[in-house]
Length: 186
Image 1 (tube, one colour):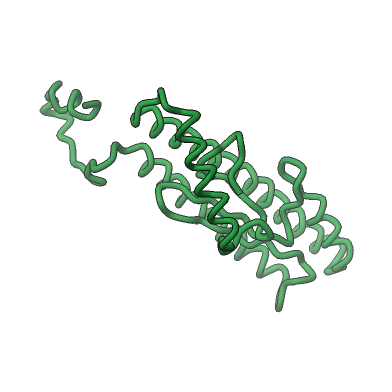
Image 2 (cartoon, one colour):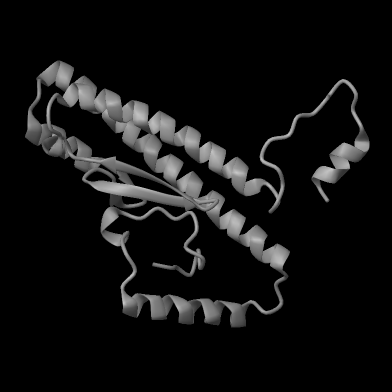
């Protein structure tokens, strides 16, 4: 599950078929890969390692947002297709299957992102897999995508905070103190 581009597996999105419980033999591979990574990166400080993890996480978050935007545009297209042609399931499925991100079909899968210790997942069923009103389900899925994008934004902000930093701070901008600003970077 770890890749050479993102050796920590942080922030990548994977289709549901690649996400799941780690098998016992997989956990041994993960442990040996972690040990190998530590040997390959002996000169990196802990801070540099944290920056690299954060960068990889943001890259994965950007990929997830890109995939969600394509899915949302496709949902809009499916809604328009239903209005003009009716609920022809075969045509709707073909349209959904054509929606791809980085060469992978988005629909009929679940996308997952892990960032700042939290996971965000989005299930994108094909129209033929939807129970009930397809139009209503498309609207609900659009709303879910908007909510998940907000969550990802919050996670990026959370991941960018220094470890141990309070998550909420109030600043008095009228009585600005340069030392307060300096303490943010310390």
